[in-house]
Image (cartoon, rainbow, N blue to C red; front, side, top):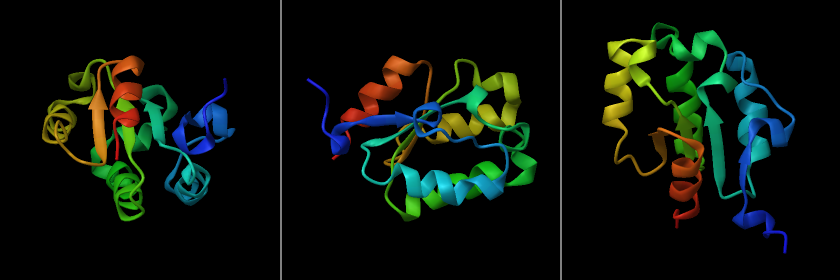
Length: 115
């Protein structure tokens, strides 16, 4: 049986969208409405999202928090993107709307457990 739309965790490929720049954020946010949450992989994100100095990841997260849309970001090794990135991942270990997770299964489990 296919899950209800409201029970479905979605991904960028399923939405037919990409996140290569900040200009892509509004379309991704809009397309995520009606889903349980968005599961992102670090490979789904443009390089500027992974470079914290650009502020694009913060902008993305702020939009999702503002609209109360949970996001799980699969990053097997946060230190790969630098110490500040790893620190950000640790800081979000208990965040109610944004989580960094080690694999897709952990991300889906956390998103499905959202109220």
